[in-house]
Image (cartoon, rainbow, N blue to C red):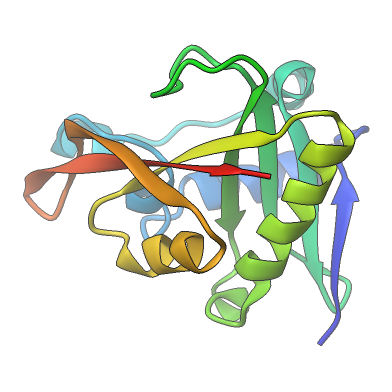
Length: 173
C-alpha cells in the first residue's frame, strides 16, 4: 500500500465529478458539513469546474492517492472567519477520505502529518480544526496527532435526529 499526496493546481472535470460524488455521499455528508436540520442533511449540491477553481484561491488543496487511486482530499486555508481562537497565521484544515475502501487504514494519520509539514513550510505554526461530537474516530485520530480541545460550539450540526456540538481543536507545530 503506497500513499501519495499531490497538490491540486489544475482541476479537471474528472476531479469535479469525484468531489461531487464525495460531497453528496450520504455516509460522508454528516461527517464533512454542518447541517441545521433534516432537510439540510438531505440536500445535495453540485459543484462546477469554476467552483473548484474558485475554491483553490483560498484553499491549499491536496489529493490523496492510495496505490495510484484517488481516495481523498485535504486542504487548509489561513485565518478564515470561522476560527474559534482568532490567532493570526492559523491554518484551518479539512480532510475527506472519500472512497470507502480507503477508510480505517491509517491514511488520515499520514495525510494530516503531510499537511502539517506543508503548513510549516508556508510559515504557519498553528492549526485549528472542527470535528463533530459524534465523530469519535476522528477525535481519537486528532488527539493521537497532538491536537487539544479548545472549545465547543453548541447545536452546530444535525444528525441522527438531534443536534450535536462542534468540537474545536488546535495544535502548535
